[in-house]
Amino acid sequence: MEYFDANVINLPPNEAGVYKKPIYYGLIHVFSGFVAFYYAWFGVVFLVYQLSQLILNKRFFIFQGKMEDGNSLGHTAFKLAEFLVGILIGYIVHKSFPNVKFPKDRFENK
Image 1: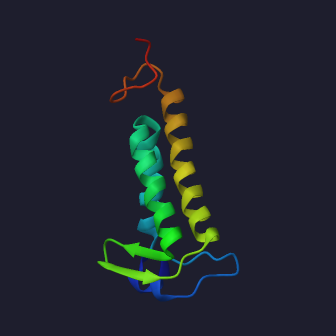
Image 2: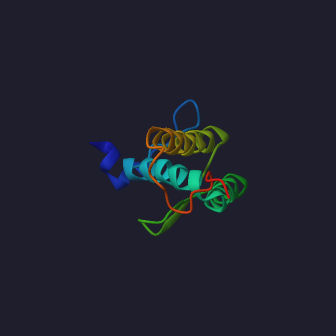
Image 3: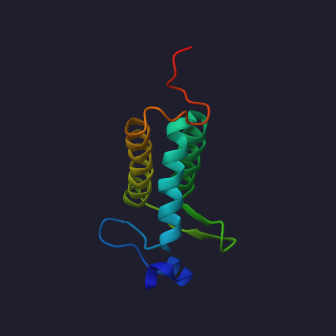
């Protein structure tokens, strides 16, 4: 149940440098990847946002309205892996439903 608890953001990172976070943050990263599959600019914004957190050594928590010190390459890599899962889901959905026209489908022949 701790992954639904907003207080897990105060826990130290594990051996790989990954901080525990509420599950909805992971779902947001996956959903962001799904959106970026169709809208490349969204992926660029996501990557800049994540890399800025790494460079500044900060973690931003939008829903809690706070910013915490501490970040790591492992933690950022984990968030980017969640993002890539979303891209993969977008690819699978796109290939699984070839007759469905998705919004601003970048794959259609012009």
